[in-house]
Image (cartoon, rainbow, N blue to C red; front, side):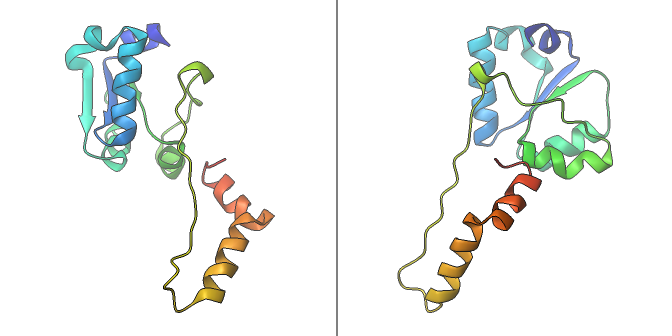
Length: 128
């Protein structure tokens, strides 16, 4: 991975939370300083994906799997997840607001998310 990053003409990520993680990961890998001006940052994942779609050379881009999968039909390729030892996971949780006027509908929705059909929706968008 280090070799690929250093060989890239640009390494692209966002400035949001995942981009903050990527910068710390690059430091941990010992390549952050070497990348220097080759590290290109955008405000959000959409801007990163749009940059990568334009295909401006040998670029290495980082984004959430969910972002990348949205753009595969436009030419992006998901190479794969980060190696386990440097992977970072986002955990999602659900809750119902106690002041809701639609308690039964909210409970039904939360239950649906835990059922195989609901979990399949997450899986189809890259969320495990």
